[in-house]
Length: 66
Image 1 (cartoon, rainbow, N blue to C red):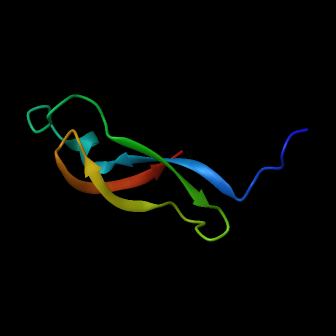
Image 2: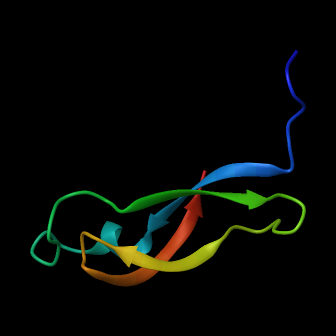
């Protein structure tokens, strides 16, 4: 039997500065992404969290993507 879709959903957080940063500023190519869960009932809007970006080697804003 399949379970009902729960309240908690898996989301992906992507670095906002990696997309606009040039290659000379980055330590390695690519975009920093984290996966996490959020409660759909408590947090209806998209998440924005400060997290560490290993490509830029600093704390940056990570936004929820689809």
